[in-house]
Length: 209
Image (cartoon, rainbow, N blue to C red; front, top):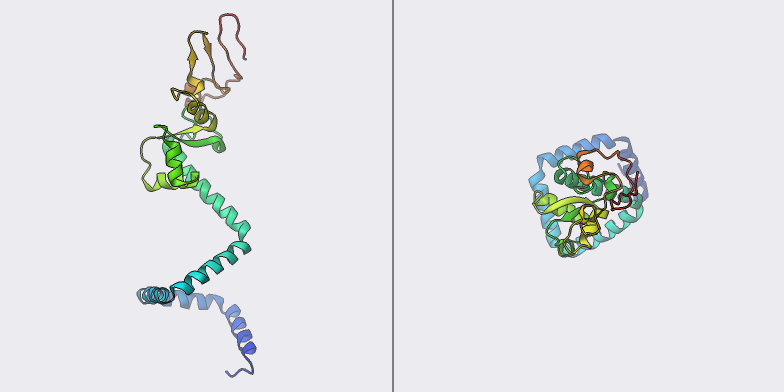
């Protein structure tokens, strides 16, 4: 079909595509399935012969796509990050999804703890927490890790013996601190309904409920 101008031809092509989108998609899919090796070879050859142009185009296209779809990408990235975290939490807590020390169950408070206290070095090698989750999954969940809440993780890191303050007992002063939600061993079992706020067992007084 002859066209009076290039613009007329483009207009016709656009209209045809909109009216036959499903049919064109099926034809393209069928062609790809029947010629997959040929297409892969052609693509590889083109990228090799046009490496600089391909990188420049991909960089430009990627930038434009991110600017145009930033809100969607943020949502997708958050969903992916949450999925990776849940996989790690599920494995290392054996499905309990709670802190190994105090039994905290709010997922946003839970984090990965390095049992051998080499977390700073490991995170420096990998980067952020998401890369740590990816590394754990890729390496089939190796030993040497546990799930703690941020309080227990930071609390044990500040102690010389790396024991969480929830578990520490000052024998000289006869003072014992327990977690606000109850004793750690009870919390891990799921018995976290005790209304304790803070209990200090001394010779003269007890503060708590």
